[in-house]
Length: 146
Image (cartoon, rainbow, N blue to C red; front, side, top):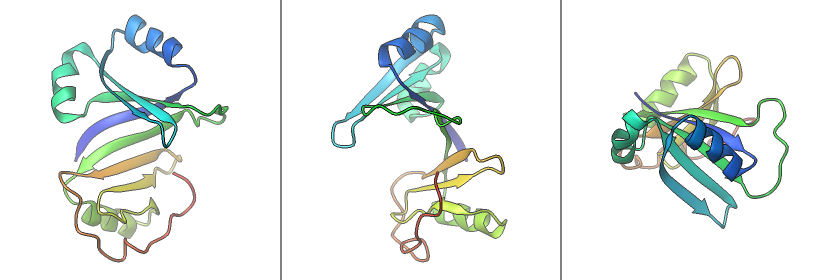
């Protein structure tokens, strides 16, 4: 397993960059604008992690700006932890066998979400290419929120 990033939802891009970039000294490593889904992702890394972050897309903070206005109550501004795994299906099967719910199954062989006992979302991402689509994951519905 490899630590990837922590996601935080933000309300104002410039104010957030003033804090994370200008005050904390983090460096923007990449930015993704998605007009269709109406969001912007801004990835930042500590100065000592910039080269690693650019090469491996990990060890970053992901600032998520949703273009549509939303009030983030109850900690909704904190999104999730993310980890890369060697085999998404084996990892999800193990987690499920331990009695935890797979809230967003890896239907496409790439991404799943589970929650900690305290309700913190954890994103699991397949290392490398997506695995071939497989059951029971392909037809498993989402459960609750993630």
